[in-house]
Image (cartoon, rainbow, N blue to C red; front, side, top):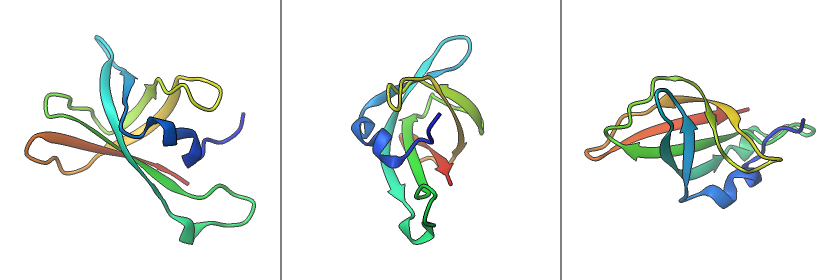
Length: 98
């Protein structure tokens, strides 16, 4: 299995992604991708961060969830996310890939 790269997620920027949660799945939006090229090491993937947003009523704990991206050979992909400080109308989450 190959490692996921920022390019795998680029088609999803601005689109909603289903997250497998109980009792039912929810949807978040992939807001942006941030590459950390300054940390790149030859032979390894470039570290990157995925940023997601969701309405305030979507409150995910910091944990790993199955995201239903149809990238890199399908999914779901188990991705660990952490919540950032919410804004007035939106919750923000991020996932770090090193």
